[in-house]
Image (tube, rainbow, N blue to C red; front, side):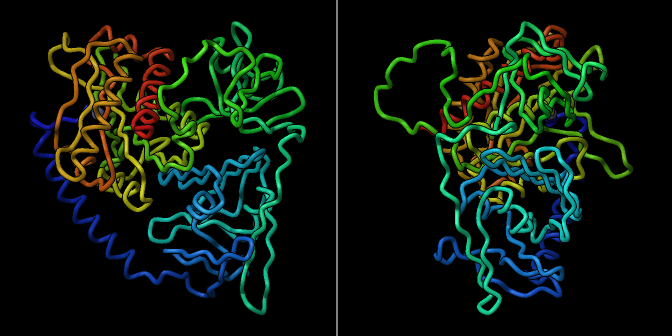
Length: 445
Ligand SMILES: [Zn+2]
């Protein structure tokens, strides 16, 4: 919920003002910083001999390692990347590797195996900067540094499409048994954390001989037996048993509209306020918190978008210190294709129910409205709740965004029926499916 009319509005204005001041201050700070870190020296990057231009310059750091913007990995080399500015966590999805790095840390995870680096990921002008050689070698890109010319040349190894897929060469798995147990570790003797239903999909983050490690809600990880799931081939979307024959499209459309698109997902609320108390957003009649529901939906959206080849930025995975302007700034500084904020609505009248999408009738109003309308259609189709329609509103998180931006109110947490729904994984899954289908449809137009 985003409250504009009630007593909360005054506080919001004040917070807004503080945010603007803080934002301007931080913005000033960014620009007063030298683009290159101290003690570093410039370096030129080429891909198969072709010079690459950067807005934030790569450099050689004090540890003698070449550091490049994360965006370079996605834009110039075509890998899916994620940057979570809240957890300061970088995710890079290779063909058979999932690499995780954290700003300020020398430890990385490669398919869940901890690796120590001799340098670290950092943030310059709001951009994640990653160690080039470490990332490239894990992605199978050959790095050739010429110390005389200070040129780093990258050569992508030819991929053999017919090569046998390795153990963890799996992006997503789907539960094939009627139910699968998710354990805290790779073995039957580990605690069962959750039961997953048939058809549920999970992002694989690691593997042993007979277990997959998968990402689950709440930023956590769990283990599932390989024999209880089947891999979903990300490079070949047709699954062993295609559910329905799809009618031939009237006109040829981009088969992968999400590939390479930069999308910012903002699960609303959970901002840590001055004084340290978190903002849970709205709370349902039995105590369900909006922040938890929208985070679960947001994580599902992120996994689905990444599986379709998008570069996804999530504004939080737990509590965040980001202001509304800060959330919008993630979209602006990453030149995102769109910004989608996810919420649950609330009203003093418990009978209010249904789905609505809000847009800002200011910057890029036409695109905002179009995106809102496409998303609303898909959400209503997917969730089957009352169609409230699209509504123009001047929410700060939308106002500060310079790319197409919308705010989704999936359902009313204040309505007992819809609160009950919001507890269920099926509601969260449908909401995520509706959002992803809407994003895809908007990009296909
Ligand atoms: Zn909200």
